[in-house]
Amino acid sequence: MQPRMRRIATFISTVAAALLLSLSLSAPAQAATHNPVIFVHGLSSSSSSWDEWTADFKADGYTDSELYAWSYSWGQSNVTTAQQLATKVQSVLSQTGASKVDLVAHSMGPLSSRYYLKNLGGTAYVDDFVSVAGTNHGTSLAGWCAWLYTSCAQMNTGSSFLTALNSGDETPGSVSYAAYWSNCDEYLDPDSTALLNGATNVGVGCIAHTDTNNDYGVYTQVRDFIA
Image (tube, rainbow, N blue to C red; front, side):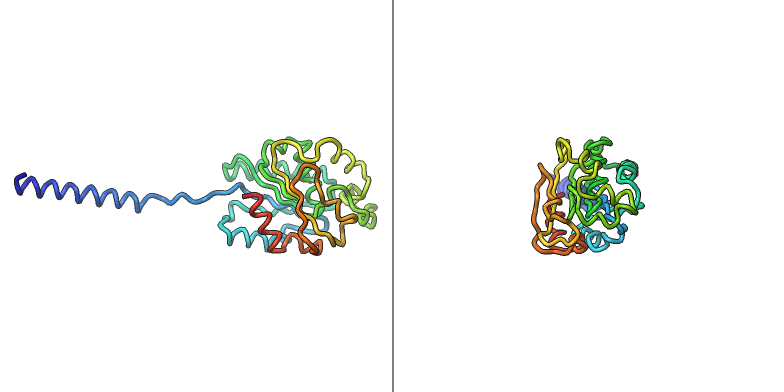
């Protein structure tokens, strides 16, 4: 090859290599994405009860646009809350472009969430459902507030709401279900009310009811389940 042709070939190779390097450096990294997570609090609570877990999720790679701690009027009927949750889910799906969400609910929160799944078509839009210290089959301690709040009356052991909610399949659809429960929960009587037939039921040891949804050990199990 003539020296001039050799120089041209070398120049072309150098430019091509530089171009390829530039393209590889400028290409955006493909970030890992997750299903948006909607957190549903319980009786006498609010979205702030999830502050520690949302911080933990962010530390583990979730973004603000993937985490939705949601507040509702907890004294109202769980049916009304379920309807509002259905609207919230559609809003999050529209906002994020995701096809499904994950639901993480605490205490009374699983009642409205499960009503949404069972009766309002929620199984089409939820990938994973997590109940944390959920009053899934009622608690006798709800008697103290049953005369004050519709939601509390529905949470009382043997209520017509719970009878209907737990009739038939407790874990409908293709959703992955998990229920985490403490063996010394002071608000759930009996503790076994938190279990769900057909779910992955996980005992977390002796943790107070109000600590179950901010305990880091429980968080890591929930994180791994919805992952």
